[in-house]
Image (cartoon, rainbow, N blue to C red; front, top):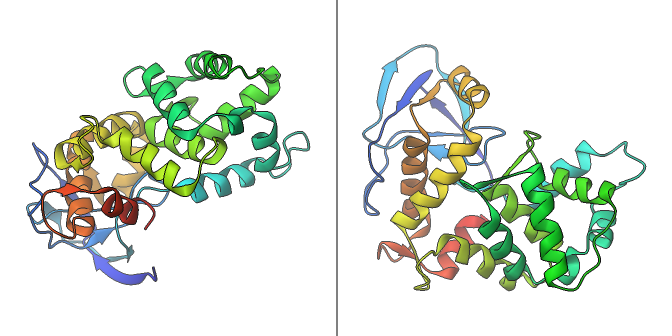
Length: 263
């Protein structure tokens, strides 16, 4: 969707002890966090602690960066690498194109520890996944290239959102197969809906990995101070439901989730 330019206070503190209810409203201006996993908005209860010079920010719907972003970032990262060339080579050589997206995502998620996979953990789980599907493992150089594709921020760890993006790119399945696989990661109790609680829990696990001191420093320099991963997850969950829960029943159906995730 087209962007519009808004004006925000120079410093905003995001402070929230629990995930906000689905029906809550947001009145503060949206803040785009370039390079982060999400674009989020401060809730109505947020505290503006300094009214300094206004800075322009882009007002857009809150979304999680999907596979298109990962593919572009990967191709840019390896633009000059003659051995890898592009994403198509990885798809051909990784073996994951023969693995159903739902199977790949659920298996690697199950191997994650505290919502993340180190390079060593990823390589072990990746090899076991291929073996379970009777697929010959590629060479070590390809295996490392697969990890680098998943690890889009280059911190040598694959978090849950990076896992979703990488699996969506490389594993077999239609668009519907992929959105259902992603939906099932959020829908922990398997009732066919994503609740606010499930959204909050998943995003907290992601932010605990990606909200490093360096990221916090960048956010602070942009005028946004977040006190914890739970705070950011609460704000993001609230804005997600405000945008995506069209029938206001406090839960997201597959259709509502798809509209939000790939907005």
